[in-house]
Image (tube, rainbow, N blue to C red):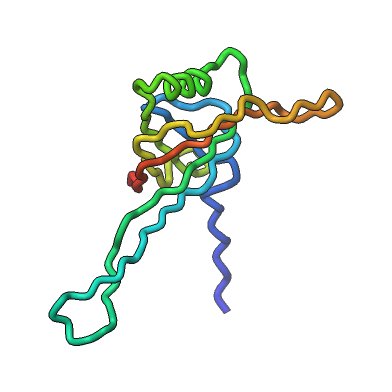
Length: 150
């Protein structure tokens, strides 16, 4: 029996990802929820069709919200400033890139999230004077579309 080849190293180890907002790296990111899209099937039947069974065609596509959590740094006001722009209604849509990285931090696969804006904001997570947890801030982003980048 020939010797077995060693298993390939896992190219997507936990915590190996980067996030950019309009080309600038987002620091201290802990989690990003998965990307999900749903296209509604629409029943269609041509007027001259001889069958009563409709054909299903693609309808409206919806992109689920994405939540980004990161360690709070009082000196970094990016999330607060972005929420303030939504409140003012000016210049609040931004593009993001989420990249999965291999062990050498080279991008393996990336997605562009288009015309995102904060629809929810967690200013800080639960505070516990007895614990050792990191204080987290989070944004829930409305995403108008996303697409693979590679």
